Image (cartoon, rainbow, N blue to C red; front, side):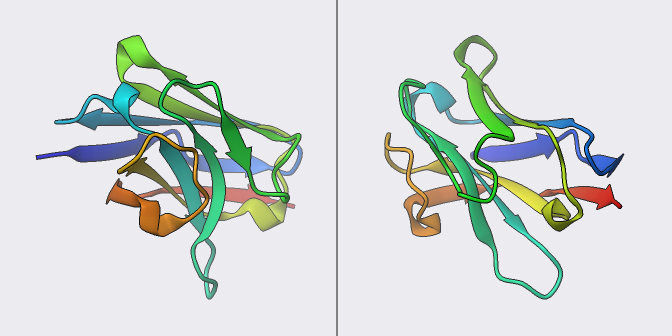
Length: 124
């Protein structure tokens, strides 16, 4: 059984930074693309960032380009989301997902395993 677990969320002031981690068991993450999505209160879940199976390709939402960086550590079977220059509008539950393919897709339907989410709150 595959389990995806996020960690690293919390409360931070605007302009601050956080690093989210995503670990998986039951699946070797290095074989699949990984993605981060988020859902703010009253809004639909949206794509944030994705990284291909080998890390050679990354994809970001326009709203986070230049501020967020996705990376992966194959040895630790872990994916990270470094979030800098955080804004109040980044406040959301952040979900990590493992793709059924190797491509860094922004389509949520490409992802077959999801974590429970970690809360990120950015105060103004």
